[in-house]
Length: 251
Image (cartoon, rainbow, N blue to C red; front, side, top):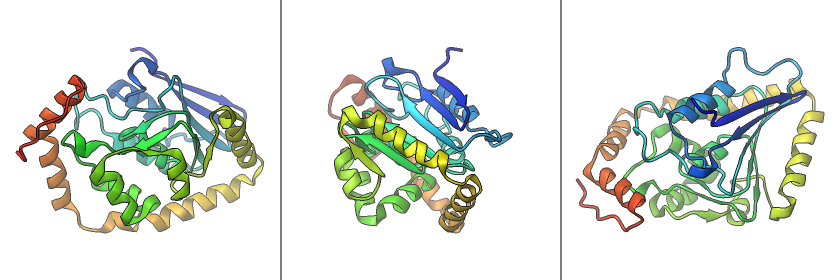
């Protein structure tokens, strides 16, 4: 299996790098498994670690799930995003380009996002006949609120990083030539902070945000599965691969 993800732990910093630039760092089953392993809660971070960083090779941060893969089976992105979100120490996403669908969710499940002005964020699922799960929509509502979540999901068009920063969805939007220096400044600040304080703060935030998990949503899960298994979803994926407008029928 080729390495689609590189993990490096250098003192206080764990760096996880997506390395499938020829496919826009789209996440296939192999990449998902490797990302999950990089954020394995057992044993979790080492004693010297203070922060984790997610970055990507190439022009695109992450184009989401690989639509050529087996959607909804091996590609269980919720496991990965839950591991990122509940990682005991802060996680920083350094986003140089497009973060779409699963790539958008990967970034937003991090604690802080530092993005280039060239980056775009979006959830294009409605344009290919799919729908995000309860878990993924919950994250959008937490960071974006209901009005912006409707814009992101129902329209499906990406938002520029500048707009994401104005809305408070990401921590920093900086000129492309300043991305690395600004990201380094954020990472260094976290490294210098008290690690026990960071752990306590992150655990507190996660616990207070978790209440939506208790809301009954089996019927919502059924709606999402219906969309994913529909003829429209098959048509949407084919159309995206063929670079044409999809013709949806509601079936």
